[in-house]
Length: 521
Image 1: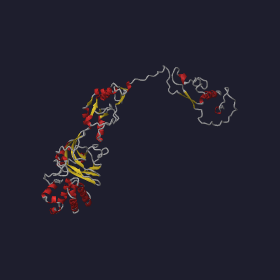
Image 2: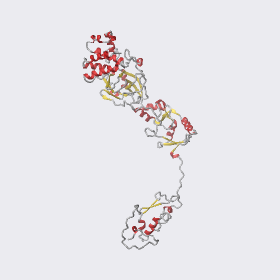
Image 3: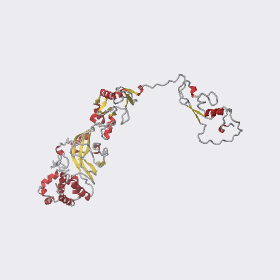
Image 4: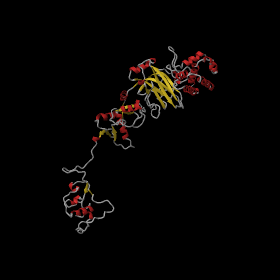
């Protein structure tokens, strides 16, 4: 482990380097190369302090880069700690070259020893558990139904902890250096994807730092890096194939991953993956079935439960995700309900944000546990497209709504008129004065004062031939019509009477006073 005195000595060396030398150190260890001299110096110093106690391999790599890149390094052996003072120049050069991202032409030196190299190692003395992994099957990240990892391109880059600052990992990529990239040009379902995780052993779910972004050839890549509440496995790797210029084999593609405010390390890598379309996944789901007999057996079992009152249940033929009629009814094998969701809609939802939970009961429904329900499929096949719901009996039989028994109704007599609006009879003052007879208003007032005894018993306001609803439909068991008088005032206090234009003729023959509002003129 290096001492603090060694780090302070390295800081003094950093202060004497030129901008070009500082940029070379940053580029060699995945640090951002932009900024003024002070920014470059602070960036290298922060990397030293962050790796001094947590990652001795990275620390030693940066230290040897500094010692080898400054002029006159042959005279600096006396400045090294005793453990490294006896180290030969060629030994240090070999150690540095193992981390050099740009080895000389014709050199077989590995690149960037602080990351997983294509040979599966992590430098000459790194002690990670995954050091013995093969380059094409490092098993660091999980496969999903939407893609299959085939091979890694380049190294697996370590993203140091950044508590207070931003950091960038820059990857330069040429198609001529990686023959596997040619498959991304020749096959539309082969993609180059950016993977990121918080562990250096696997397999693990995809997880990017909470604050992160990716640029390819100075163009922002639009992708949901956070997933659902930054939960591991709730996002997909980033497809950058269309942002690269792979047909130009000598073109240097620049991939920049920027992140900030992390409290743990992350590991970034590029992988060639074979993608799987939704139609392909749905075809695989169709190969697994939930038999009709097992569904009926489960329905009957629930109906025979002595603690449960067996009744019919409704089965919706609409997908709860798309609200359209089911086409490929599927559900998880662990689900206890008959209701299904459409396989196409479910795959589209998981393609946006993989959760693999049943949208009905919210139980785990991974891809390998999805199957087609043959019982619901038969219902869909035997019903027209307009049917959206069926009724399932406790014995497993089903029927549509049109097949339900109609309730008993009293049929009207032949020739009788059905008028649903005659339950309400509205009586206005025009009824009483249409014939111009002076005695008619008295009859109306008398009828209004006792509607239940006069009007509803068959009488009319003017003693004429007007029929009530009860007399129009003789023999009907319909309730009596209710009469509402619109001429009566709802005010608590009556308006003062107007002065009559004619002399009041006296009380009516039946002894009731005629109200002033009905005076004849």
